[in-house]
Image 1: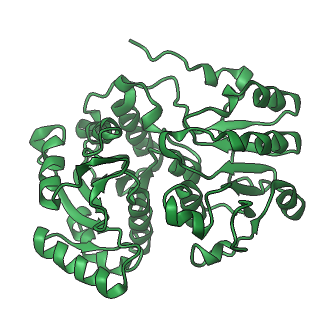
Image 2: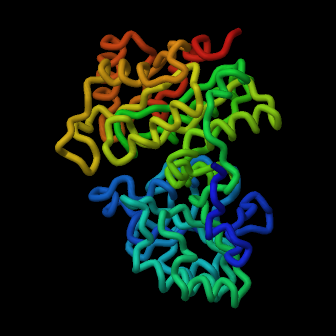
Image 3: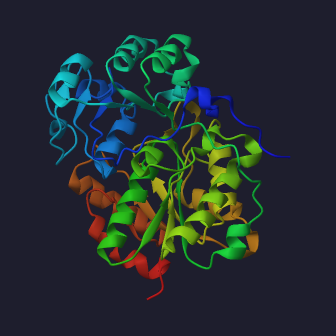
Length: 378
């Protein structure tokens, strides 16, 4: 059964990728009521799309917009990023001459907040194209769709999947004879994208050629291509991952693959996406991402985070094909909020419990050099 064409891919909506790497693009990130330190105390992951783009995108960001943010520069929130923070779009547009607006929030359920609408209308009227990764399409608001047409602005809905996705059939296992490393998580919003990009950076420093497979809206924005798996119809989720890996093998011939993880097998809302990635990527290795401070599943406090050795066993048991006998080969800890001393003790404890290389990839990425011997043959 072929995948039906999605309404939002019709030419009348012009929902096509925007080349963010074009030097003529001057890009703002819109993170209203999400980016400041005060907001992060209550909603620590709300601005994670903005954070991911700021940390890892290879194109320039001219500014961040958040009227509630008390900080004046991104460097006050994210280290080593000298990007101004503006109180409103009008000020940001005047100062930067921006022509692209990335929506930088990732709320639960991916709904576009009503308080965004007025500013998005202003953006379309004043020469800004829009990049959105929310579940609610910008084009689903009739007024915004009309403005995009009237002012000839583009809207890239990065979460809308392509129409030609296959059904998975373990072709990656059959056709790819290279390491395929999948990030898996103890919970959602825990650092799987960060682990992917930190590993990629370290690989490049060690003269390897990694290929990131972007499976969520933030990585799609960073890379300029990819498929947001959680928006695919169920039958095609694993096939989307399979398709991306096979295409990049032909295009780039990398040394190995780093597949961005999504959700968690232990989260009732996002377990299907996590399982689809395991079955579509047919990984040779898995890296487990964990935040030790988190004791209960995000947004479902009925469920405790499982013991780490239990999680490893379950993830390894879900791999496909089962006779590949895939192993979790390392633990990436998110120790944000801990002191260095507390983090080191937690890393040492986890290493003793699992016998696996363990570190925080942000604080001590150099500790993972030994990991490459387990993934890429010398």
